[in-house]
Image 1 (cartoon, rainbow, N blue to C red):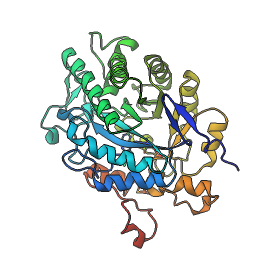
Image 2: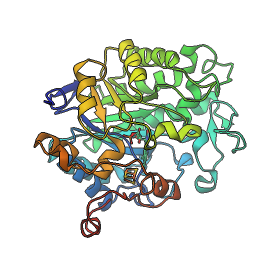
Image 3: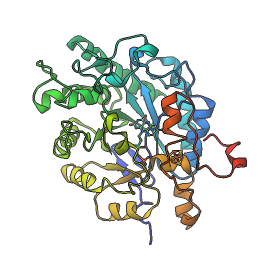
Image 4: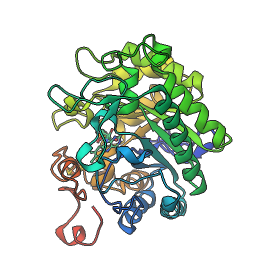
Length: 374
Ligand SMILES: Cc1cc2nc3c(=O)[nH]c(=O)nc-3n(C[C@H](O)[C@H](O)[C@H](O)COP(=O)(O)O)c2cc1C
Ligand code: SF4
């Protein structure tokens, strides 16, 4: 099989990406406690750029100091971090990759013990039954937060990055506004769809205006929430279409809230492309590029999805942890040499939740493991 679609360039707003291989945002706990990206962060991202990924997304980075939910989360709420993001960007650019950073407020999925501040959300609905009840944001606080997203995007731009991704998925703050399950507001930020999406519309406007259209702006959304009263794919198709109308340059399509982590980072029994029907439904709703994700470990079904115009780019999440050289091996006709992610979750997700640097049980030989970052 030829992989011509996977290796063709694509335009995302003002950013041209050399191929369709994406590293999605993945928290790794390599950042320093002061919110800067560390030397280890740099080596980790650089290794994936060297391995041939066209678009590298720096993990969820905190836009508001009251919502830092982990000691090793990178932060973009202070100018002191900009150089460290710039160093990562430069390292990846050397290998022809474009670099995006995901902007996040953890909202009801935060950690008030670590942040020292109460959890915040659209309404007082906890992330899961029995969990801490968040405090709704006031209208004034919403407008201040919108400016913080703009500040963070300007820092990303000053660092020389190519794109920012607004995290609107997985039950974090912005997602809590999108879903009628978690948004019970009766002001202009709640009620009908356009009211529930208003906070993201304001963020998109703010980011575009403050960065003069020079940064690509992506939105990560859920294809569905995978819980009975959460967003369904029909809701998400409308959200994707409206985000396009509001000025998003691409949709990065994930799925599930953390109550359904078995759909967010699927286990071994789920095969690559298990979300294909949902991906296709969202693709039909928009004309901007769509990034698909979900247990992809080899190039075959990804190439087919691109050829059939059911997706535009393919994110290899855990596969990029397990083998950062995946695109290069495919390009060099060495598919059989790819170290395949087994979806064991033991090195990556387990460590991430423990607040420790991620590892991978699948990474190469023990000797190599001792000299590489993951
Ligand atoms: C260790 C780890 C950390 C993650 N952190 C983030 C994150 O910061 N932001 C986000 O939107 N998704 C995050 N994800 C989800 C991935 O971006 C991706 O959507 C998910 O792993 C499914 O892709 P895969 O099956 O190719 O691994 C994370 C996943 C893993 C495994
Ligand atoms: S630790 Fe397991 S699930 Fe995580 S990337 Fe490695 S092989 Fe995949």
